[in-house]
Length: 140
Image (tube, rainbow, N blue to C red; front, top):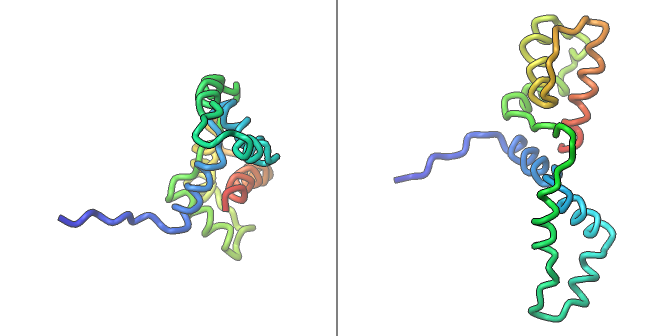
């Protein structure tokens, strides 16, 4: 029997993979990313005798039990990612209707930031668009 094909878009799959890789889950992940970026991890691996475990993975696991006290930013759903991509590629960005705000922008904002939000006034939507764009641009 043939396996069902994954029908999600390639762009969304790449974005999702980058998002998952970039979002840390705890203190251990943060420390690991810092040691990789500064070259400390490579240095430790170089000077650790062959076959010996330096204990980094176990330390990371223990430290990941410590969580940061902030709400993480969630990722786009595939549909939302595609809607936002279409909006950003559109020539009509200045034509943001109430219906578009209600049906597209607000659900995306709520999904990403897990906040309670009432219908914004037209003069205030730029802050929501900017926040969504920051998330989008981080992983594209």
